[in-house]
Length: 80
Image (tube, rainbow, N blue to C red; front, side, top):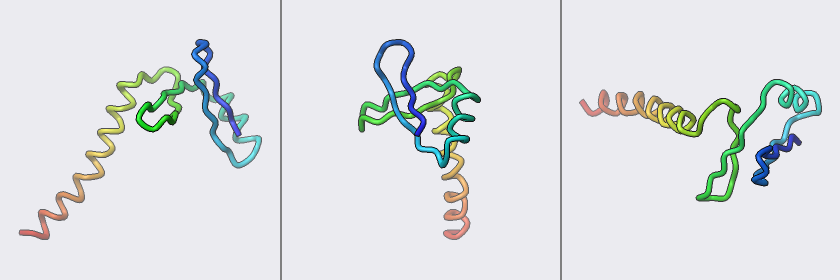
């Protein structure tokens, strides 16, 4: 397990399970992470330390839209 703890004193923390010790150590060494709390369901996610929450949510929206575009195009082609 890799445990994240906020360094700003807010007490936010979360854990991420890894397959073995080496990938966990690599994860800690490679990047510093930020913990974002999801108040709706009381869970946490981690993002790159330099990534603001706004850019993270914009990226998620873009991925959802691009996932729906081919489906919508396929349905339009079938209906015509």
